[in-house]
Image 1 (tube, helix red, strand yellow):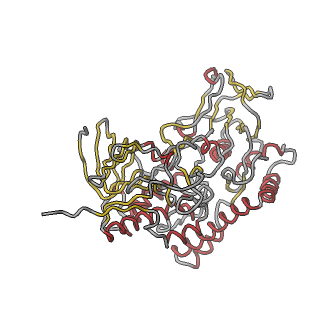
Image 2 (cartoon, rainbow, N blue to C red):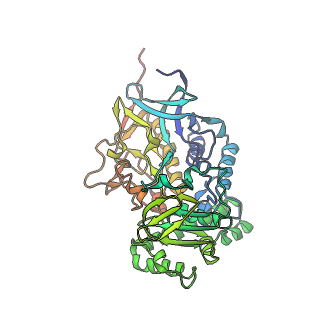
Image 3 (cartoon, one colour):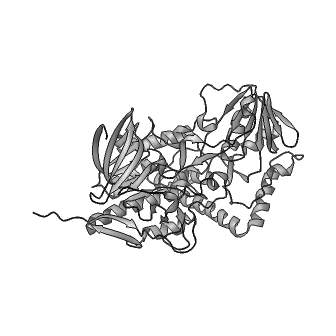
Length: 489
């Protein structure tokens, strides 16, 4: 039993990060007759951009595609610091009256759908007590990272290490690494962000990687965007820059997938020109093709600059064990360290780890098919907002927010109580909804929903095609609708 039934709203949005605030805006403008509440587990807005506080935290997509289409990005930086993104999200929530709908400290535990009542009961833990909200539609905008746990491999002997071991997801505010020897384990976006940010103060920073990642440099500022802002209204300049940058990102992705050999040569040549002449190319040469894993971006080549200055270095090897003063490598070499940062990845979860059932039957997301990239086969009136893997998160997220608003209007206009994608899902072979070979995705293959080979059960990685289809989508395609009950008497 719950201690309190707090409210009923038309829509419950889970998560007050970039996605949750964007979803609330589209809901309030495209379906303004619907009431909503945003349930946020933490005590602050911002999601990822409030959780992660490690040095140098920044966007890994340009802000003209990561920011909201309805709230132009006006700062000079195209690759933005985490604090600036956090302030941007808060600013949008305040300006559009969304902040007042956020219920902080609501850690959603479960959600139960009743076909008889045609509504969800959402149960949250709030200050040690249980609170319930009911809603007609449940919208998960909590991303797919576990905020409570991160991924750290089982390193032999790590308990013997006499220094500090830090995971970037739980960065201590008082960490003092000035003049110290720092080893960052990992080669993904977090590692290449941390290294140049720590290099000026640390004695030396070493990136220890098991295998290299494709890395490319982008300017910190977008000069074309700056020029457009001088001659066009802010919203128009923002939109033109967004389309330009999206076309560039998606075009390069398609080039990589169609011509992997040429893309590999281009990326390795660019990286090779950025490091000292005697730098060993093995540290820059991945074993996989471009975009089998997400491409990493360094603004203004800051990582390469730290290496050229001798403040940072890269070691490609495997860990044999930790000892009291550092790390012993399989090659027999060792790295002495005072601080070790395990930038070894994140833990992927589905639907915020919330226990979901439909009429008492547990819903296992890993056994369901994803419908149009946002709903699950056989689950009524529920959507999950996830972004692109090859481009900015917000590009796909905004399509999802728009779709949900149109879905709700369709329910009202047709007199439906609820709708759900065909419980049978897709025919034929299936594949995980996320198509990257990255470790954090592969570890979650059984957790994530499946996709099929044909529409509407595929997850495409092309914003232009998705935007075209989304604007013209058939809301009745592969859907099962149930009319509202007519009151008698």
